[in-house]
Image (cartoon, helix red, strand yellow):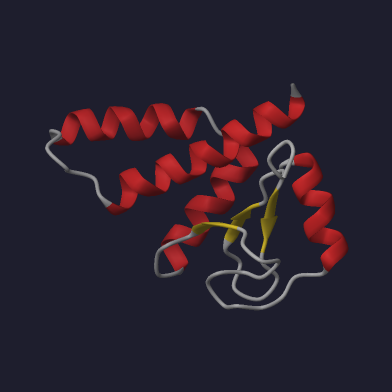
Length: 111
């Protein structure tokens, strides 16, 4: 149950980023603002604050899916133990080098 909630948080971050990067896509401004507000409200406060700070200070994208144990933005390899621990719990990692938010999804069952 807890891993599911963390997975939802990761997807919520990606959805928020999508709204920030592509706000229109056939939707009215008020609709997008409502969707963004609802998406932001679904995230833990500290995570949302970190995202908003990163959004104000850095070029997009701000959120990535962790791939191959390295940050897709700066390509810095993360410590293997940190990656494995985060994947096992479906956590979000903050890259120590570029501060991007990295979604560490657990491996698929049977993979």
